[in-house]
Amino acid sequence: MNSIMKFVLPVVLVFAVIGLLFNPIALLQQLLWIVVIVGLIFLVYRFVMSKRYGIPLFPKRTGPTRSQIRKAKKTSRHHNRPTKRNTNIQPINTKSKTESLIRKKRTDHNFKVIEGKKNKKKNRALF
Image 1: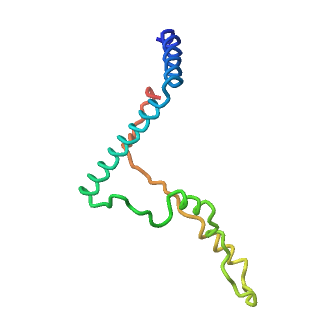
Image 2: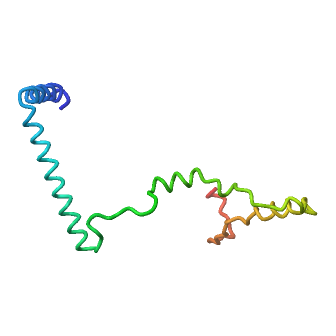
């Protein structure tokens, strides 16, 4: 198969280049017809979908796009933003505050004990 393609592909490309050199207007006409036909198919599809599901034929974009939302999430510093504090008031117990923060971060494990079949007699031959 590969040996046949080594000869067929260059021959097809040579004929394509010859056709392009001698009649480039025909190529442009074919491309234009392809664009028109694909456009008509797209419009018919949109028209059918708008009638079936009640969506507008040409919907307007409102709000940010997905890529803009993704970029905003990546560049957002909301979770690191310091809150405004009154600089005149000093916390009395800073040590207990850090300890309570550490305790809040710790969570219980999510392990669950599954009780299975327990064999009280262990057969030494199976080990």
